[in-house]
Amino acid sequence: MAFEKGTSGNPAGRPVGTGSVRRMMAKTVRPHLETLVERLLAAALNGDANAAGAVVGLYSATVHPRRQHDQKTA
Image (cartoon, rainbow, N blue to C red; front, top):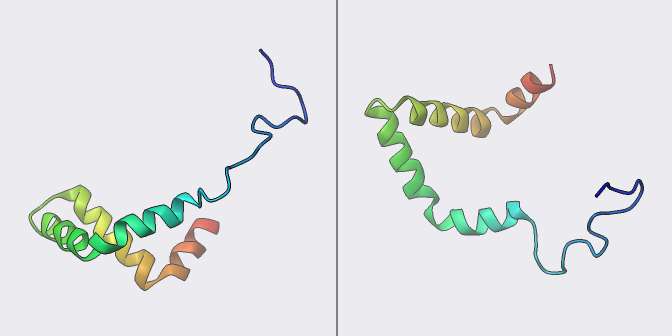
């Protein structure tokens, strides 16, 4: 079955009240954020390279968010 040009695959759109994924994630993660960061940092300090990369990425995004954006667009 081919798609018809100019016809939406979801004509009804997103149901009212479903909200955005970003908002849902923020609401779910926010209460646990401090614990998650502490555990991530502990794992990085214990030699977990993936955790260390995540810590550096989070640090860069929160401390220098403009620089990270500029690097992506350059």
